[in-house]
Image (tube, rainbow, N blue to C red; front, side, top):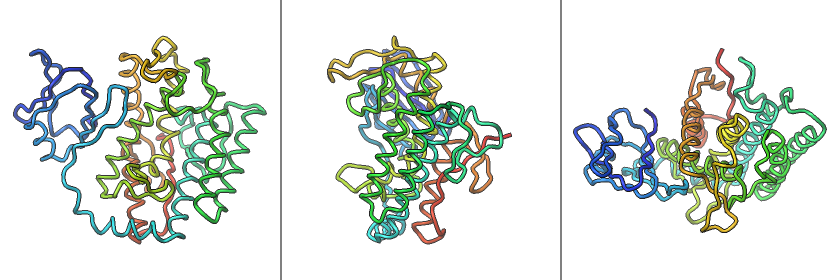
Length: 355
């Protein structure tokens, strides 16, 4: 068991022996062995006893608190001050302009290449066995073809090439943003059902597709944060994303190359497979034009997200077979080695389907 979500509103999480027990109105909803739990996600109005919190801290389980709609509230974590050496190196890398820019370019390269791969294959789940998800940033044979798609792909490649030639981080961010203006219309072409998607809208999401994307990225953020903390990073010191109060810049950096291959693929599969329809959404009264998922739909998205993370691929850098969840950790550890001077350069994510 990698992750467990507690979504039963009004429930309480107790510790009984070496298990967590979820109760509401004296009814038992779940019994979770502590040794099998890597991450506990508590959503909405759910209580937790001090005995349960102490047990989770003792075994080092990552505990994430989210709203019922997926907004991050905080985490319960043990003392992580033992990673001083890595964090000093991390800060030194940030203040070295050339090093920080090089890392930022590798992050953008991985993001755009994986976006392109998803567009070309309609998701890695459709790629042929043995084919790399990322092939040096080059395109694979498109399945969603046509002049419009080809134009969007050319635009993305042009923006990536310009970004990699940029001499400062602000210019790089500008070209990355322009690449996104080509990506989202192309992504929209892959949707086989019209749910009102006209482009990426962040807050509030104005259509079901944007609501799915935003919730998916919130789930991905909590997974990447867990990996970054496991490795020992200061999650607020990043290289591509600027350092700002309250922004987990390093987490956002590590997320970039996983956004398309995890979240965007899940959204395409849910919509194109008919598992999510307009009836699964409602207007968010608090946000006016905002759209939110109904509770049953939320559960479906969580299940699809967790299933995606457990899919196994060949992690090209080492040749090992690893789940996407494990690949997040491997990429974080690779970045740590580069920052500490144990590896020469950060290599963007490369995957192959297992045979």
